[in-house]
Image (cartoon, rainbow, N blue to C red; front, side):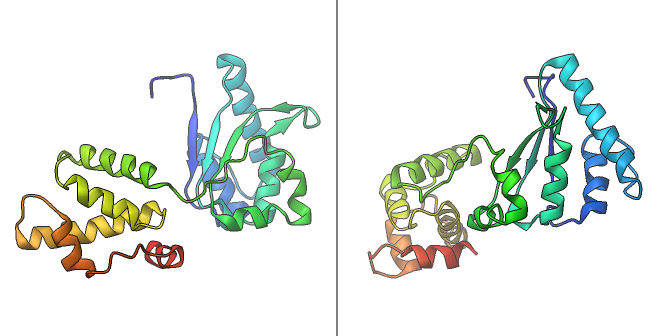
Length: 213
């Protein structure tokens, strides 16, 4: 928001087929596109991006979450859309976010040309307890009550979340719900032991995956 020249759009329905893909792209970039006339839609989108790039020197950015759900033909269409001049000039920056299935998807023979064009890949591993602690501290601060949990409880949660951010948040939410029911002013390790049992054994990563799902 501090850079008005930057145009950022997000694709919210990655599982769309090509027709719906063009409909959503039209909405994202403020264009009236006809999915029944793909050539015109293709041309209008690229002209929009080229004009923006010429005026601002910033490529538009398209962010796609859950990209592992995308159809191979839509990904191929997006590859062709995003560059001009025989693939020598990029007019759109695309950020694909997804789980491990996305990596497998990009290994399909028909998507190898797309995979070779991805300049930067960030493969996130399990978070460390320190990283989880930073996340939890940030979330509590943003919620307006940084002292909602005792430091020892925060350490316990981060050590028992198996490196999974969603597992950490789910466990914290369970404690918050129980704390509201009991009308306590601060969540502590005693409440943790009562809610999750007396075992101090950290959750396994397989448990974390189930809990995250």
